[in-house]
Length: 142
Image 1 (tube, helix red, strand yellow):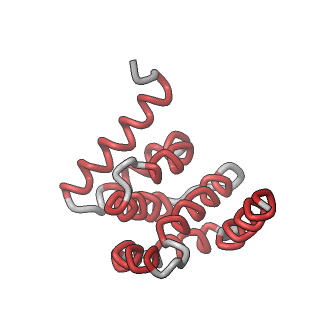
Image 2 (image 1 turned 60 degrees about the vertical axis):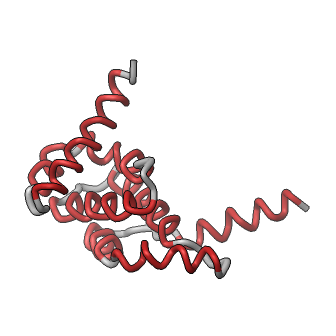
């Protein structure tokens, strides 16, 4: 019975993940997330409904997979960073940044350029979390 539940959960979670065919699709999907989505997760949790934070993580994973074979634009880099900021409001572990890290590592100049669109406090936060995650991934935490 437990195996059946796990299999069903995997199918359900994969059904929510988008498989992007174009950069524009990825940009549009990520740009649709709002702070209200994050705030509404508490009620969705109480109602036993799927959480937006999980959908965000799934979409970031799809963007990371998509970016392995496709060119990343500055706008996509901006949307990735914006969604990471949104996710950090609910989850202080920076899981979103960890998911997006391979995209950042291959497109640092686009992320740095796109970061300038954020207010100074958010720029500083984004710089710290992405550079810190990159440093930890390449040099270790010790």
